[in-house]
Length: 76
Image (tube, rainbow, N blue to C red; front, side, top):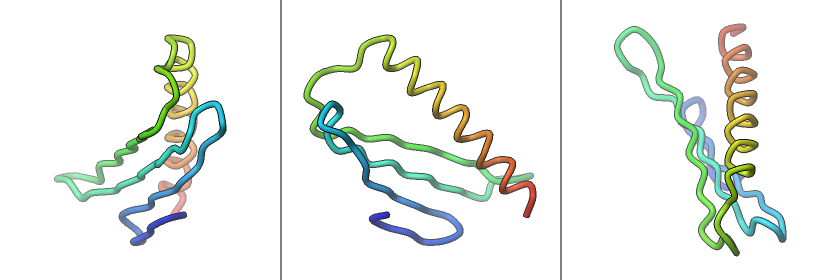
């Protein structure tokens, strides 16, 4: 975790030799009738562009992560 302002903002740093550093931001903003959840992924030093297969896997992982977060938030 590189920054945290609960319950609205979390920034994490991860990465591998294959991807380089990855910065992930999770943000919750109040909107009329609810909360807007935004996940932003930055890969500032990526050694090469992602392939279509990589993008599909990233999207699938993001969808699964969002579903898990939604379950946890709704259980509060």
